Amino acid sequence: MSVDTKWTYDENYVREYSQKRGEPEWLTEQRLTAIRLTDELELPKPEKTNIKTWNFTEFKHDSGEAAPIQSVDDLHEDVQALIDRSTEEQNLIVFRDGKPIYRTESDHLKEQGVLFLDIETAAREHSDLLKKYFMGSAVEVDEHRLTALHVALLNGGTFIYVPKNVMVEAPLQTIYWQEDPEAGLFNHVIVAAEDNSQVTYLENYASFNREQSAVANIISEVYTGQNAKVSYGGVDHFEKGVTTYVNRRGYVEKDGYLEWALGQMNEGNTVSDNTTVLQGDGSHADTKAVSIGREDQSQNFWTNIVHYGKHSTGHILTHGVMKDKASSIFNGVTKIKHGATKADGQQTERVLMLSERARGDANPILLIDEDDVTAGHAASVGRVDPMQMFYMMSRGIPRTEAERLIIHGFLAPVVNELPIQAVKERLTEVIERKVY
Image (tube, rainbow, N blue to C red; front, side, top):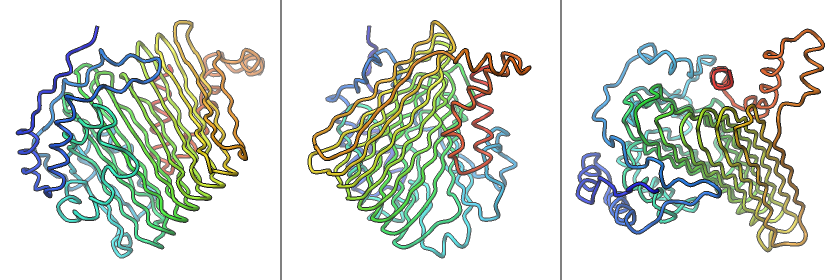
């Protein structure tokens, strides 16, 4: 049985909301086009996961104004724990229910001409630049109903622009905190790194209410110019009541390098699409992702690297841990287009099962339209290795502690890639809580 997906919001609501935010005409028109499409388009159809009964309609879209705070000490203690305090050069924006409430950036970042703004401010103050990248080469508004709904109801997000030849050494960090348990988060992130530039960006999504229903509909677009490098870290931890659709896309030009490190730790039902297009010759993408599923949670992860450029390189590493009655599908796709000679596509999906009733599918897929390439895949689904357990227990380590160490080692390839120590520690705490 499917649920009624008739939307509460119409063209008049969307127009008034856009005008209230002082948005440029082009963005208002994109919103209106999108809301019309929601009645025409279908929901996405992730492989082996039926999302027709999932909640995509019950949420509060506009939670009203959010008063700014003067100090991070006024934040929820769990939000404070995510903040990087190890460096004096701090670049941080904290959002509450889609509204920016705290922002700090270094003088050096401003001097370099880097834009690090909430997307509402970017639309008002840098309209033409935002228009260049918004729903551009990475993602289309009419892909399905959820992409259209995202554009129509966009209510938060970040715009990062790094000019040519600029190297940003300190990480840029955002925290998206859902305080209102009914708030719907329609968050849009753009990272645009021009030629020969470099930037590291880390985002955290967090909520702390397990019971009430809400929706997170998130799209990220990352544009990596020629010989540019972008390191993108993300840790998602929405509570059980939040249904999450997250779509992170990358577009990489000649000799560009894009790396993803994603900790996907949501408690509720989740659909995740992480697609990178290697457009230019010599372009490179490295995707690492981990997830833990528990209780009756259902998740579907799609990791896709598409090669157009000659000598392009794409690597995918996905590790998942399943317990209780959780179900997760891990699809890894390496697609090498005709003409992408000397391309190299490698992928590995591994799923660790902690319960007989849990389900985890690892599906590596190679789609090759060119002869002169290198491609490979590996996949495994299984329980904790009894030989490893025996070895550790024979040296006096209790069974629970031995299993804990094995799981942390299994997830370490992604956890260790995150650029901020406070976030690594927080992710480790989440892993502990989800597994034990």
